[in-house]
Amino acid sequence: RETLGGRGPSMKIAPPDRRSSSRQTPEGFEFSIPAKRNIFLMLFLAAWLVGWAFGEVFAARELLFGKNDATDLFLGAWLIGWTLGGGFALYTWLWMLNGREVVVLRYDVLVSRRDLWGFGRSREYDLQHAKNLRVAPGSWNPYDWSGAWQLWGIGGGPNQRLTSSSWLRLRSRRLAHV
Image 1 (cartoon, rainbow, N blue to C red):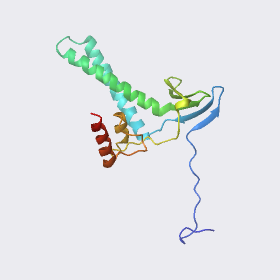
Image 2 (cartoon, rainbow, N blue to C red; image 1 turned 60 degrees about the vertical axis):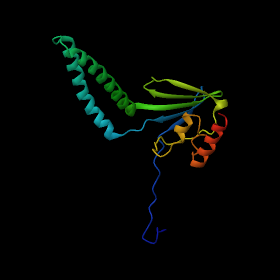
Image 3 (cartoon, rainbow, N blue to C red; image 1 turned 120 degrees about the vertical axis):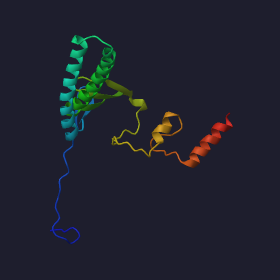
């Protein structure tokens, strides 16, 4: 048997199964990617949503059937914010429970859909404008400003970094046109 660094037998480890699936449909080629599940966050949100529901019921009952006084305006505004926050938490919990992203490659368009039990909004992209499609991790890097520069029409895309020398060249070009 082969050893690893001469320290004994090596062990073969099977790679994990794919989370995504693909299939050919009458619409086109479909990729389905289930939402990432964070067990700790799912358990925390489930417990938080129980407390949220109690707060929602008690605040609504106080607002509807309590004595009418000056605190009703504050309680009404608080209840709106509490309801929106709870709706966001519930959507996040349901997304982790059964959400999936579906990408369908048709002959003329690329369709992307965030699907939650058949509900969701689809976005269609013209294939003439789609280039270099790839899977990229959804991580955020606080030191990567290339996307922020793109917003202002400065950057050339996520693969181009804005260095101090390119910034000076860009600035001198802009000043030359003023």
